[in-house]
Length: 229
Image 1: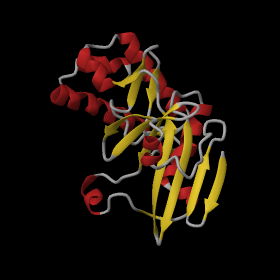
Image 2 (image 1 turned 45 degrees about the horizontal axis):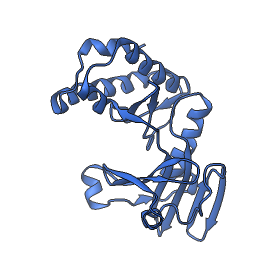
Image 3 (image 1 turned 135 degrees about the vertical axis):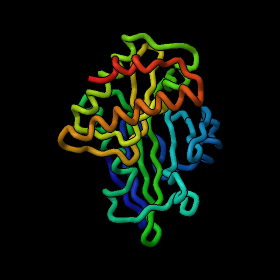
């Protein structure tokens, strides 16, 4: 990982994946001008899917959620460059990759400090030919074997002592080769011990139940027994 600091801005990036100027890649207009926007998705903000020289990528600006997010949309209290959310997620993804967990490769991160606050962005690899569990389960049920593969990937993450504090079925993808991926590690962290791991499973199980009601996914409570260790 290379780091560049220019006044109140710090960039971190992987030189093997990023060939474009790091100062430009966090601006959607840069990709639009080159006609290299592949698409977009709406969440708390817009995630842009772009084509870099090396890989397809997802560009995300960090935004707050909930009621507080309506007041302060994208500013966070600055307590050091290595405490910024983008740096933390960049490093955590590397930790998971080294542990053999299927997660997107981080390409570049940026933090911009303004007074006591900062804003942040992350450019990471887009998982090719993949859909999240909500989209897949709308079309039909998963096999027991696939649920077991999901459980195996979560256990690899837990063996690396990573607590995914927002583990839900929007953050689990399956690609065209039936490979399971876990995404969106904002606010997640490493944590010792085992007591916290059940809370990840509980949150995931609630998300299945929620989407049965909201999206009509093909899921039965017994399916979750294939995921739990």
